[in-house]
Image (tube, rainbow, N blue to C red; front, side, top):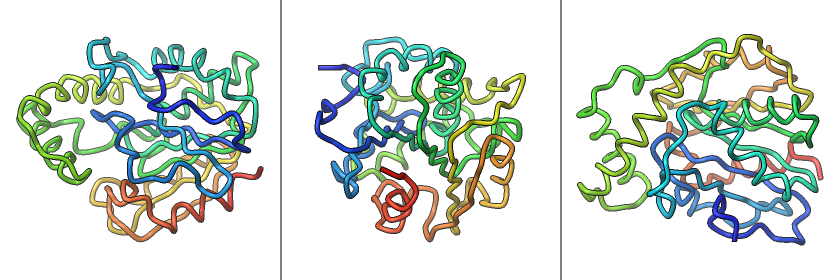
Amino acid sequence: MNKWFLREPSATSKARLFCLPYSGCGASMYRQWPYFIGDIEVCPVQLPGRENRYIEESYSSYEELAEQVIPNLLPYLDRPFAFFGHCGSALPCYEIALQLIRNGQPMPSHLFISSQVAPHDGPQGRFLTMSDVELYEELKHLIIQMGGAPIPDLIELNLGVLRKDVDANKKYKPIDITKLNCQITAVGWNDDAEINPNDMKGWSECGDTDFVTLLGNHYSFLEGPEELFNLIKSKLVI
């Protein structure tokens, strides 16, 4: 079993959607999503330092994360695939695609970027200036949003991971913005208090990008809204 996945990707799927977890969280945050969206297999990626990998050291930069994850994804990039990242996990999706290009390795058919500004327009977001006390409260709120119980020891365990994620976001400043040769869909949410959909326009400099605003708030994606799934099915060509 590949430790980068909570479940082994199916050998018979027609396409794969690799979903990276939001800052401070693990792959189980996608537990309300189905195993398949039409013919597209949902593959939540488990990052070091989280959940069943809590004893491992978390990454310190998005570049480091991409270097770690790519060799473990390569065996599963043998059919059409895409990445989905929301807020703090959107920029790592871009960096992974960037390194795949530079390495001459398989490229994603699509990047789904949710609630995040382009690399050259950041960093942006409330988390970036929060104290540990404030981040603790945000984690507590997020765990409740995910349907969990805000156990103090669990929050403390995730706080260090969240702090590292925030620091990685702060220092992610690619020297050159490389246009990806895959389609990008930038997904905003009409009631998002964190990122205004209008602030996501910079993604057009990162590749051929279309912009979509869905109904919902910053956390609505966790529930697996049908509108989002229909969008993914319509964009990821198999």
